Image (cartoon, rainbow, N blue to C red; front, side, top):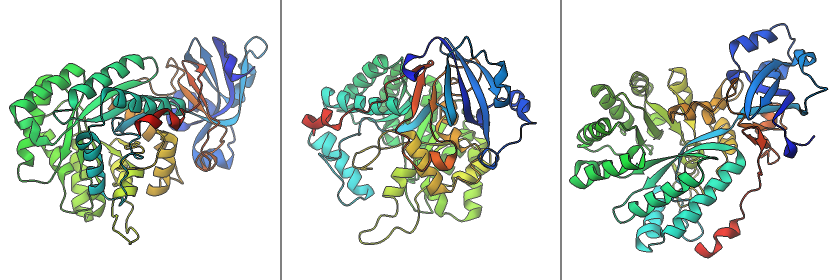
Length: 446
């Protein structure tokens, strides 16, 4: 049988699943099986999966192949390929995406990116309903084809723009709800929430079912602004998501202040902070103090390895001196939930990308040395960001939806050495069309 003709009940045999996704009781059934060096090194569990009516109903160690009714049920041979859950992208900017060709950031700097977006959205007024809808949906098409099932997007919200943007988001969220779970975060200066208009905007975010968010800067009023946004979020039962310390200034400690504010308010909802780059250029004592506060405040961290590598420490005619990413290994070791995500895609902040979290994981692994051992870092693009989004159906547990990505790669070295364009994506146990949209779809917008 072929993947395109999957029935309601079948088995995927001879597959390898990262140990972190396997229930301990199931893994213990495999203790007597002599493992190859590859399986031990990469912590991969050789097994067979039973799929019934779109859900995972069985996981057997590979030695128990005799228990599978091969005569009566269809079989897909995984050929020792790796299986992961579908991806969850915790930090994107769908509204900015795919604007590079009409407003490129030719000097590659952070200020050049800000100017490019301002020019595109405000000066030229390009962000009409049709423009936003088509560019954002293009991003969704790419994400879905690559195997993503949940996305949180930050939305730029200048007063002249946010109503159109929110309308487009609402319509796309409804249209795509069977394929991708969409969440929205406001992206404004924190000072805006200290105004009457800002309070009304908080109501609009609540009405959207969104997350309150903004950009934290090291300014004298920061604690006041944080107290204000935490109060507004508490009153409206909203989660928070901040851009924090997206720079290489050791004195930038907005992550520290956000964690302090959360503890000061006994904030019960989830806070996520993205970027946190300056943590990597602070002395160890300062950094570890912040990490301890982040852990106590239950703040989740999302690192954006590709965009931060691209923008940070960019100086004309000089090779960058550091990699731009935050202290993901130290945060993880302290028990902080750390995710890796896409961030910008083909816009002035990052001129590349394809909404593919395997590429994010591959780059993140190489940039931050998350290999040998790989441990459970594959969770950083699957179950961890899903948990921070409040979603509980991104995993490989029995009874969960069969939303899976099957790769021909048999180990991490193979997985992270090729683009894996031949991956098989299953949604509710059914193979989807993984054809990517043609860039030419957007030509008339650019």
